[in-house]
Image (cartoon, protein in one colour):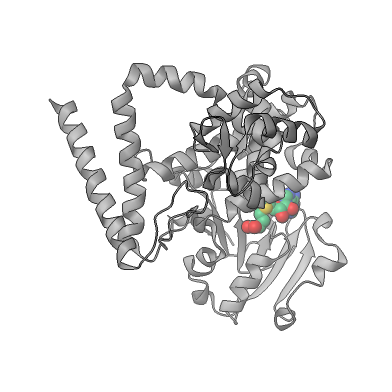
Length: 431
Ligand SMILES: C[S@@+](CC[C@H](N)C(=O)[O-])C[C@H]1O[C@@H](n2cnc3c(N)ncnc32)[C@H](O)[C@@H]1O
């Protein structure tokens, strides 16, 4: 009977959580998200409104479990396997610019739409091909057919027309990543247990020997698509800069200098410096990041406290400071290279120097909500696809610092509320 009780419990949870959400929305005169072309693309529930915010995440998890149960393990597995084709219709829609050819108001017939799409692409596609792709996409709420043979936008397909970062995210995943994903297992066979960023499925799929970032920089269209796609990802609430500013007790450092390693063009240091006027920042990155324009981009009121400099973090550190800060650096490298980065710091470290890391974090299995667990596990897969690196759990951080040098001591690992990233603070116990 346990399985029957589980179904009933899930169904009740779905009903309860829905009630919390709809009550909240109604009390504020707000709408729910919807597939209607003019509907809301996201729920208007900010994380500060904790009860409905959490209820929505739990609702999504419970509906997913109840869905999987109602389909049953056998059918679910069959579906999961052939859903490798699930991205095909989305890819074709992106590739052939279908959203541009569908009117935002009213509908268009498959015949007319095919003619428009063919002109747009200067390519015969055929009405049957377009129709089958769109009707498949409609099962994912992308476009709809309010009348037989008449196609209209939904809120989802309209995003493909209007939301540039998301459009690029879709292109990056379906156009650029699909073939590497199909080659991960082949890469694992060719380069068993590799730690090298040049022995990935991206190397295999594109038959090239460069590390990921060098590879994408070679093609400006690819690089631009990647940068915009990352905006769609980084734009998610959990990656907001405020989590870095508020998530670490920067104020406790007093009058200290923080070296922001791989700090890009300094935007994180600017935000922390704004909030903590006693801190100074040295933002180090590769020479390519330091054009005259980017150096000149330090806000006027911060020029005395934030400097943008050049330093390769694989080479010995020469800047003596109280804190070395790494945001979104280590998850891009395998342990072998992270150890090298931490060892290259040692010449500059003094007793009590801190290494502060703000990076992705894998929850212990089963401890996070379903949506968060899925997102972090998927991100971890992409680190394998692109760079042979990985996301880390709390224990992994302790192991990493210990491997680099036993004089590192990890003080603590924590994830600020609502942040998608964790902080790791390690202290140098040597002289
Ligand atoms: C994912 S970005 C993170 C940027 C920034 N810390 C943030 O949180 O937005 C990685 C950064 O590391 C820099 N980087 C990569 N290899 C480097 C190296 N060997 N030395 C210094 N910086 C490097 C890149 O140029 C890039 O700015």
